[in-house]
Each structure stands twice: as C-alpha cells, then as structure tokens.
Amino acid sequence: MTEPSAPQTIEELLDRMLEVSDGLPKRLKQCADYVAANPDRIAVSTVAEMAEGAGVKPSAFMRFCQVLGFSGFSQMQRLFRDSYVQNWPDYPTRLEKLRESGAGSASALLAEFIEAGRLSLESLAKTIDPETLDAAIKTLSQANMVHIVGLRRAFSVAAYFAYAFEKMNVPTMIHDHVGRLDNRHAIRKGDAVIAITFAPYTAETVELAEAARAAGADVIAITDAIASPLRPITPLMLTVSEADFGAFRSLSATLSLAVALVVAVGANTQ
Image 1: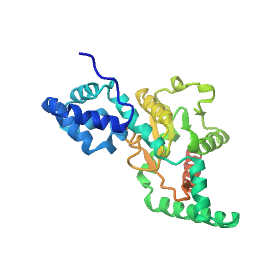
Image 2: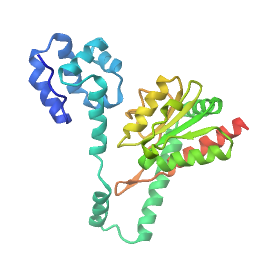
Image 3: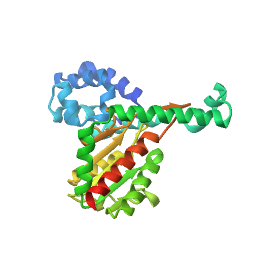
Image 4: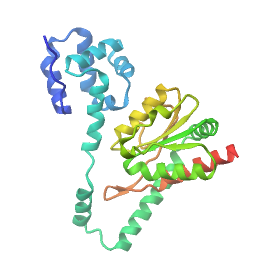
C-alpha cells in the first residue's frame, strides 16, 4: 500500500490525523495525541524531544510522520515553520492598519517609534541573561572564524556585525545568500556562527544554524522568543523582545546587543 501524499497545510495535517487516529498502533496513537495537544512544539523541537514528549522512541515518531505522508520529521516540521511567515501581516496590510488608526503626522510616528525603542531597551536590560551573554562573548572571541547569517528584517543587524568585526580585525564571513549561493561548506569545527532571526522565522537561517552545529561549529542565536526554532540548536540563545507600533517592530534593542557583543569581542581579541 502506497503512503499518502504529504499534507500541504497544518489544517490538512490535523484532518489527516483525525482520519487515521483510530487505526493507529498504540505508540503511533501516542504520537498523534501529543502532536494534537502540542502543535506549537513542532517548529521548535527535535524529533528526539517530540518522541520524549509522546513517550515513544524517535523511530516510532519518524514512522508516525511517514504514516501521515511525510518523508520524515524534517518535512513535517517545515510545514509548521512556514506557518510563521503566513501568519505575519505583509507591509501593505500594516500600512493600511496605520492609516485606519489615524496615526497622524511624521513627527507623531517618530514619537511612537522612539517610545517603542525605549520600551525595547528597557526590556533587554531586564531580561538578558548575563551568563549566556558572557558565554557568547567567550565563544566568539575564541572562534577561528565568525560566520554571520541574518536575512530579511535581520539583515541590517547581520551587516552591522560583519562591518564592525572587520574593523576590529576579527575574521568574519557573512552568509547573505546573494545569487542564491550556499556557503555553508565554509563553516568548520572551531568556528562560531551568529544566527539572527525573528518571527516569522527565516528557514534559511535556521537551516544554516543546523548545518553549522552538524559541522561542529558553535552557534550563538539572537532571536525573539524561547519558542524560536533556534532553541533546539544551541544553548547560547540571546532573546530580544522588540516593542512595535502598527506591527512595525523596532530594532533598537537588537542593535544595542550587537554593539555590545562586537565591542566585548574586539576588546578580548586585541
């Protein structure tokens, strides 16, 4: 009997689980029950973590994914990661909402974004973990090469890292995917990768971080939530919660964190 084709949406996935649930063996039924109760965990967990939550072996969870029509856990996980992009409003929608709210003059907008930046900076000061920050600085200072990846909204932060590290003579390579070039083969054991991504999370950034970990490199994540898909990849995760106005988020706190990291690493390597 041939396996069904993979569901194309989360709704299709949940419908298929309902269809097959009654006929599943005990272990696979445990997987279905756990996924149905914890769909938010799929995008940010490894197959081992999902299997542990379901109370089964990873091989059983992989078989469950195949019964649903996926080639394996990674394909099912990609469906949930892609949903982050689909659920975030596009720029025309955000601008329309601002117009509907009567945002006012340019000076009023500036005041709102200054306030959002202030709130972001205050939140960073209260929530950053000093031990993780120190460990990230030590890791970057000892790395043979620092690789940086941050796409879409995170690109400006990645570009700043690359510029500032170059000025401090820190060996650096930015992975910007220009020309769709994939330079992950340049990452070696003893290197460090700074991976920057925020909701809706960028799949290319997460995939490069996974490849870096597989290559034996250290990964420092800069992201916006403990539930980020970077969480299973590295313990060196620096979370930054940026306030927003009209669904436009500030980068004030993220850039301040980047400056602090660059200066601290530069001071350690001179």
